[in-house]
Length: 451
Image (cartoon, rainbow, N blue to C red; front, side, top):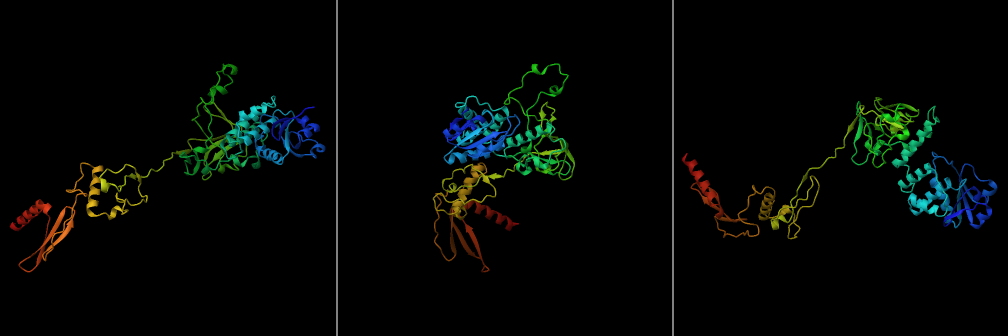
């Protein structure tokens, strides 16, 4: 009689005859049995074990992916409790092998190929059908977990619905409950980065982002659908690999959007703007021919002449180069690191580490800092002071009744009071370094008096 094969500790794989072999079950200390088959095992046997039945057919288009989480939980329950779990189908080759492979991928973080090799090393004649292999690849692409928000899982669900439409299962219309909620894309969640978005040309209502577009590879052209083609199908040149094919740019096909709920229940129809009800496209669940020669199914086709594409235009803030604190001490040019206008930043402080803001600098220091900054930006227009801040000296002039001394960067500034004949006084400001300026002012006064 058939026996089961041990894959890892506490996990066995076999066919239905292994599940009916009570001696083998006892020798392997089986406590849990998982049937992935069309019919469950007899109650007389299942009453002795913890039992779970998953209805599954060994067909290309049967979805086994959605059952993965329940199967993983049942297997963990048996293994964590110190028991052993037998997973079986009719022959232990396709359906049950797919569940075991997926469990190894999830539990041991293996790729699809690594998990298949591990199971094949023990049970060499396993052979999951092509549909199950595609689901395992999708499971790997989702990070070895069932992510219903993943774009590839959405496409998988849509393709499954399209096949059911092609088979005539929904000839009278599909019930709302048969369309999974995860296939609908929320317009505000479909944006990816700086994608462009599309608006209705008539009422300017936002419809979808680039992230909601359903892409497909360029087909062979209209000749691929012409039955009068003189080149037989078996003699046509083979298509390029998926990495060498280019993405079609001729038509706009989208995934079902949230505002389409309740409006796409028939096998085909028109798509209207959710606000102004203007026609913006059409849909056909069983598919439509793209001008590039590819068959797109299901096809939610948006007419490019009915919508406007608004490219993403991120706003770049204006930039400027801030003054630095070490300019006042060293006279070096400011760094070229920019920052955004309007951003709040700390006041630059002195190079000596005193912590005083630049706005509280003394007059000589501020004059030198401004000159250094101006020379770094506009060297030609820069005006250098007569005396550097480091060598500037302030001297105190002796005070008298009619003289007042003021400390200035470039030397003493003498203010003299002169008493006029009428008893009024006039102040004259004299600076030893500004003799030319005083002479010019004197000449102007003479000219005015003579006039």
